[in-house]
View 1 (spheres, each protein chain N blue to C red):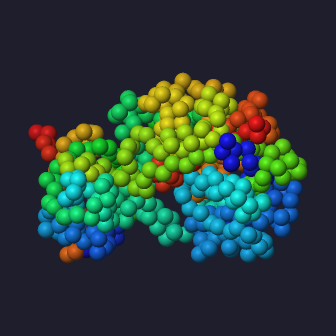
View 2: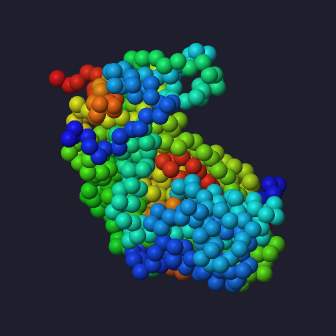
Length: 140
Length: 389
């Protein structure tokens, strides 16, 4: 038992493996376009902005702000029951792209849109580590 | 003028029993809906040369429309099953209209049903719940379908000051309509306080902000406006249709508080040569209360950010300036999944025939129906009228 058995484990593909390998080594990685300079997430074959193929994986700063959130009171499955209620949030990364994650280390009543957050990593198995976010300046 | 405007008409429309219908399976409901709509149109199954369905979750087939054609023993020229989530009904009506105008077929039967309430195994129900969201980049974080819509609601509240009371007013209006509809699954009166006192599912959405889980099916028969005059009921004409497609996954949405309903609505209005002020009623996709606010805004019924106030002021209830979801909607009539918006379509046909009884919108001549699928992803707007003008 890891405490994560039965959760919706991501299954990395050839295209997404660099992202998940990054998480496993404690790095949040995004694709960066060498032509237009934008970052993108999720991983794609081309830059979704300028169509360039000149994409490189880079380490993101790991910070962002909450663009929306909800407190899930009824878990999606039993595997998530122990941590219910949990906060599902959309995080606008400092580099531009938005990603979904959980807000951790934050009481439901303290969550707010616009809150500054930073990435933390949660190991689910030998292969899978998922990125979560916590408040950047926790209340004293 | 656009070649689809006024070119096709709905000449048959019918619902099965809805709500809790354990005595029929999803396939039976789909065929039952088809048979009722054919009877309403006064035609034999052999006259159908186009069949469009959507797959069932309870009784899925590899090729659903083929399975229904086989069951009915009909041999259409066009036969497809489609899936754009809750918007499936209206996007396939768009396809059906194009198929008729281009001569691919003459008489299209659109029939859809599912048994989400009585027909899912525990395993199917779990799989259905967990399958929403991007498999790698959303699902691991445990979002539920209500949670996706709660993200939208929260953003609307923060951006515009929308309140939980205003969201609740959507559910109360739906229930007031349902009280006038003997077929609706939920008819007990509710108040804003009842909604706010029901348990939180995903903040800020309470149980009564969420649509029902139902069994049921509905079907329509569509043909050319020219042929439509030969059917027993007065035809209901397609005046405008438009689609808009913004994203699949909510984490990729360019905005949480406005949607591709803006594009679908603008396209439908342009084709019809009509605007929001011309609509006598609207059926807006109400899987969760916040969607109605955004649709009211994006379709031009009220200014952006004022959906909450518009609803709380009583505009969308029975007798309001714009009755919305006159059958009770997904919140109070029924919601069997992808077929859900079929009932908005059949209800609109009944309203425009002036056959809706106690819930008839007096003198209604023009109606807008809108549905979205996914998480505010895929949008189709339809404008229907009594006259092909």
